[in-house]
Length: 471
Ligand code: HEC
Ligand code: HEC
Ligand code: HEC
Image 1: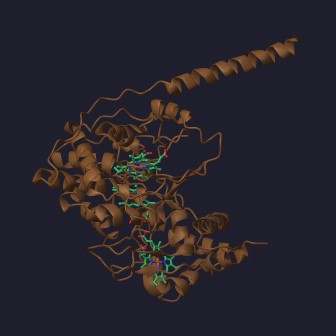
Image 2 (image 1 turned 45 degrees about the horizontal axis):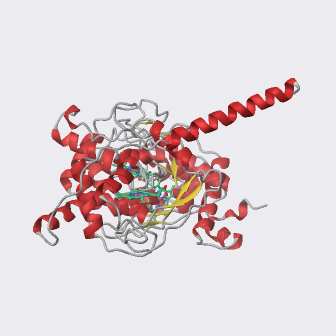
Image 3 (image 1 turned 30 degrees about the horizontal axis):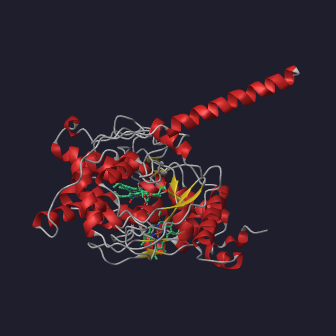
């Protein structure tokens, strides 16, 4: 062999060894603690009914329904597509149907899937099933959840849908390596380390069942959350874009975080998607409120809010906010100091008023608003282009909307308008650019096409005003 060939053979040899080593590591079965046969309660007994109800509440607090129910599909019968950078995957049928659902699961199978991310056959689940958070669920809640899914949910026969993830990325064994390296060990939240029982309950609900960090905590380049509790300064400090909306910083930062929010403000938002000064925009958080948090008890919502209020500021927000009435006075006097101000008066002031605050609870205030002041202006651009609709909740049933302005604003105009909102009434955040607007518009087009809401570019242009961008 020539020396070149020798080197090549050597490289291939080492490569093969690494591959076999990795495969072997991936295939070592994971032992998990046997948690017993499940509660032995008589069918139809009061005790069983109680467990089913307790389990139903755990399912609501854990928002299992958000992913495991398709848009207009049967409850928990699966089918909802979840986007990931490598393709779309579909949450499975978790009704107790024996053929297509989880009807044959033992309590241990259920535990391995929900808290460890392991399928009954031994394969690893994609972490889009938030088992890294559910790993902190208590045995008691897990047992109740199991009884609820076996006895309180109607079985539905519905085949699972294969993911769109292309081979070789679709191979599952590398996921086992990820799980073994990055998924946390299964252990309930240590409630003794918190100041009081209320905050401890909040920590449990936020970290485990609510899996708030799966959206609100930034991820490393291996896709794992940078922190799973308050011991890491990145915990809940603002996540990536979820379906085109920025999951904002929930830590104590006065600007861009929860620092200026009272505990009651957080409770109101979790209950009705709005509070006296701001409103939730976009699908992801509205879904959390409508499927999950609005159905939780006031005591639990207060506990979650109390825990969130203990998280110190990141101190990293670049934007600032100082109460100021200069803009309101200028606009009221008809002074349009730039194109952004002009566009605001023409398009926004009818609802949000010249002071940006409006005088009614339904129109959120723009000064000091964390969604407006995030360093990344994506959500603000998105709400201006696409509009938003408050979900109808039990406590606030009307669903009031804001129209989208994509069809009438060019990228440059939208950028100037957004910059005006970010730099008026005492708001002071970096200006937005036309290329940022273009990117958001493109993302909206792709989502509409993927969702099947439109079938052609022609139709799409009507919705998003993309004609300005199609050359
Ligand atoms: C954020 C989305 C999401 C949430 C919330 C979620 N799941 Fe899942 N779940 C998934 C996805 C996606 C899969 C499939 C993953 C895969 O194919 O690897 C899955 C798989 C499962 C499986 C394995 C089914 C099988 O045999 O393949 C079970 C069991 C399960 N989920 C139960 C639950 C329960 C119970 C809850 C609430 C406590 C829940 N899930 C919440 C997304 C979610
Ligand atoms: C599926 C992803 C997702 C999950 C899970 C999630 N959030 Fe959010 N959340 C978002 C996004 C996106 C926004 C930004 C919406 C906005 O700016 O109005 C948001 C915004 C918020 C806001 C600010 C709302 C406002 O009016 O500005 C609060 C408070 C909040 N989330 C709390 C929580 C809590 C508590 C949990 C856990 C129970 C949670 N979130 C779970 C995606 C998520
Ligand atoms: C027809 C009344 C109406 C008009 C016109 C309108 N808005 Fe809104 N706006 C609303 C309502 C209602 C909401 C709450 C919607 C929701 O949360 O889903 C809202 C929400 C918002 C939010 C999110 C606030 C938060 O707390 O997260 C921003 C930012 C915003 N509007 C800016 C604008 C700008 C800029 C314009 C002009 C391009 C505009 N709005 C025009 C009614 C309006």
